[in-house]
Image (cartoon, rainbow, N blue to C red; front, side, top):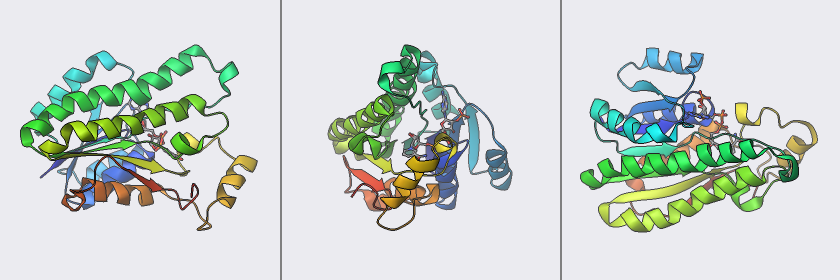
Length: 240
Ligand SMILES: NC(=O)c1ccc[n+]([C@@H]2O[C@H](COP(=O)([O-])OP(=O)(O)OC[C@H]3O[C@@H](n4cnc5c(N)ncnc54)[C@H](OP(=O)(O)O)[C@@H]3O)[C@@H](O)[C@H]2O)c1
């Protein structure tokens, strides 16, 4: 069974990706801080298809050992979905420096380090799939999300150069750019702002975590072997 490591798989998009990966026949290594009821349920339903590794990505110094441990316990991963992230909104002028540092650490430094160490297994396998979860905000912008948007744009940039570095080894690297999806991360976004996002959607609805997970499923599959260094946007057309 091919191993796919999904960060932030305890809820939201990561959990939907984990579910989709199980139905695609992978074994999922779900990484996150807090076990949830939904993840517990999924693990009870498919005990041979999903394991949980508790990790807090603010501990960037331990990421090397995490990658080594995962590889030793479960084998060399075929796929890595860098999904875990935090959203801190607030206008830059009043955003605390510690929030800025945390956003950069969790949303950029941690996935870059995890990719660096998981990539070694993929290079040995001469194949693999890396998916970096960005956001349409990386290219559209959004009032109050300048630092979050910068971290997401950084991941898209990371994708492009890394795709060039590892393509010859049969490893693809792509970005997923979801639009607004209803999750815990966006639960504070209500009222006028939410209404204006809905109004901008040409399809008249917003994308769900399941919609975005289908795109991840494609990017993880053998069928996407000619697709690398690109961004797949799943936003019900909101940014077109
Ligand atoms: N929701 C949207 O509208 C939207 C739109 C565009 C892009 N995205 C992107 O989609 C991805 C998933 O977002 P979501 O909406 O599903 O968010 P979410 O519901 O807040 O889930 C975030 C996940 O990341 C994990 N996480 C956060 N901090 C962590 C840390 N320090 N260490 C380990 N795990 C950590 C959380 O697990 P624990 O808290 O248990 O650790 C959780 O599983 C993110 O990259 C986000 O930027 C979301």
